[in-house]
Amino acid sequence: MLLLLFGIVILHLAALALLLVSTIVSAWAVGETTSTDLWTNCSTTNGGYHCVPSFSGEWMQAVQGLMVLSVVFCGISLFLFFCQLFTLRKGGCFYFTGVFQIIASLLVMTAAIVYTLMSPDWVAEDQDFGFAYFLAWGAFPLALFSGLLYLILRKKE
Image (cartoon, rainbow, N blue to C red):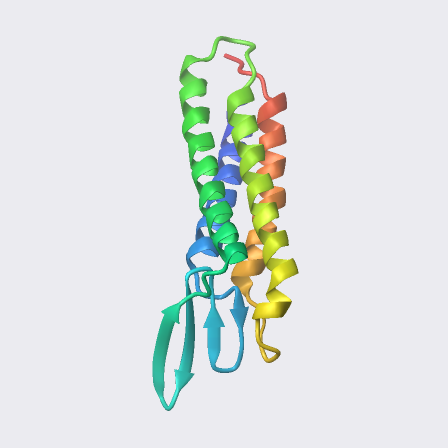
């Protein structure tokens, strides 16, 4: 049982790390001389590195908000897990933890879908999706799987 709990916590921490990195790192769209994230657009021109605030359209604000909310819900889920681990009675399920983790996975999935659908109008032709975009997509199944594991997990002594 201890090994199972340790594995679930590692899975949860991996999903949280992917969410944090994908939200912060400037690599949602990358090109030869540019990199773009949810917050800034950076470019290299004439040997200098110049960053400006990101496009502030409604859909980008939705992606920003959804990604931040997914990090918050994933963090709350981890906190709830440790609270329930010490206060839950024997045989109880980690329902709150699982629900919050599943909500986090659905939020990151929604953010990635919105970015995918709206980016062709905004991302330049010479740019491709960066690794932070793929980390966000990778965080979705990890968070969903760990949330489902929390729902079926029962506390044992």
